[in-house]
Image (tube, rainbow, N blue to C red):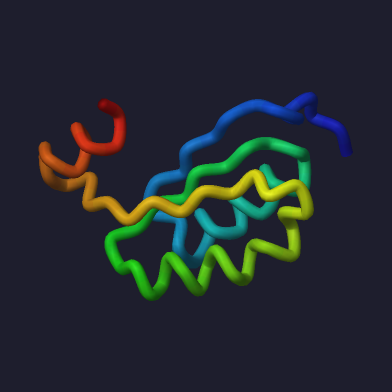
Length: 78
């Protein structure tokens, strides 16, 4: 299905597992550039490795952040 997402940038918070990780995969399969985030670097790395199969263009960026803190939000979006 072509949803017209090719080249669009998507940030998915808390996406190292579960539904959010599945959403990240769907966006990658549609050709979007995807940023996944999570607090646990190990889980994030594992998710990134798993999502690599849906990312032939290398459009995935994994960023370890805790959005429950002001510092985590500022460091990501500044």
